[in-house]
Image (cartoon, rainbow, N blue to C red; front, top):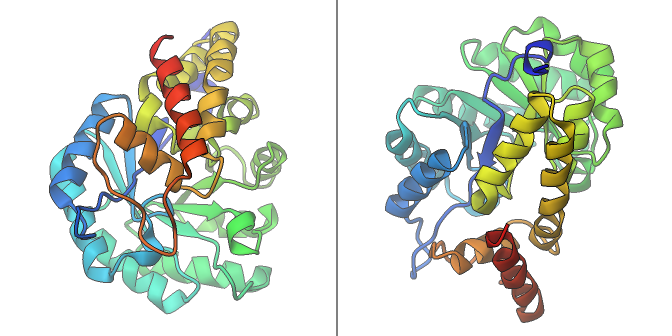
Length: 302
């Protein structure tokens, strides 16, 4: 029996790839390569693409670069995939401005991370996200909780109070536990589409009500991730579990150090010259690169 009919709607599809930002040899954003990579990812099973997120190195992209990148990816995929923009900030005014610009540029949605470093209390988080939602009422929003990076966690009860904003439609759960999915569903009901923010927890999160994944690994394993999710949704738990277990070595290799350092190296190994991360991120150490290369080679044999 298919499980897809019993889950919350998936407004951005089942597999959303958090895209890397390609840089050329001079360190400039390579818009042409970004477009080609976007097309490739869609052909490999991505329903949606997220640009200018953490994987896309948003902290080191200028406003102009972010705007150009969104436009390039939008042109490349047309209507074949949803295109989201990371527009979060620890400044409410800045997040509103960025989200308005993304909406005007044709984004299908925006990813809004919990404000980082200034660690607002729950009433501050509610006011922050409500102000953004009300500023762009036509744009679907995905809230993003990743306390390991932000130093601040958004409580399910706070999310529940935001459900009166019609455009708060989804949530990226990256606290590292399936319990967050259950707590969100109990607090918010089935209207909130919850996405796994951790490749390794995609299958466990699906089992407690998540609708898909915002993935890094789909850069190099899109078909396998798609097959795992489809197997689960079609009621074939054994095939989904086998797919999950086969992907675990890749998930470990891709998060052996700070994202997106390993995934950019993985793309290079697969023939995509996306360049090194911008400082202060560094390149992948040789030992990790060897492990990653071996893992990719093994994956190609499956």
